[in-house]
Length: 69
Image (cartoon, rainbow, N blue to C red; front, top):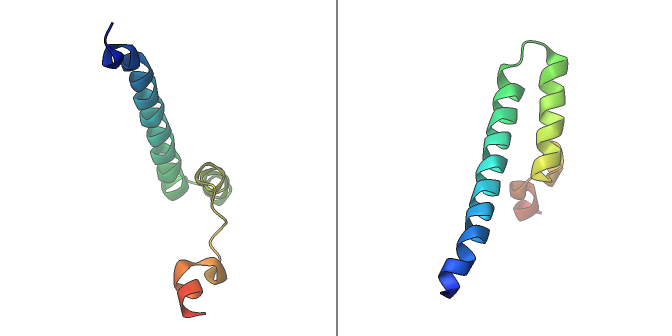
């Protein structure tokens, strides 16, 4: 058995997981923009923040503010 043949199922699983994560992020980003009520948009943005592991929009935490300081 070739090494590459043995790695194929793992590589396929990693690719499928990455695709699923990307689709989830895209759906949440669309929901945060196009939701009808402000509460739903706020909830979608909060979930997106958790998934992307970023803090909410804070001017002091932006990269530009860190470079200028």
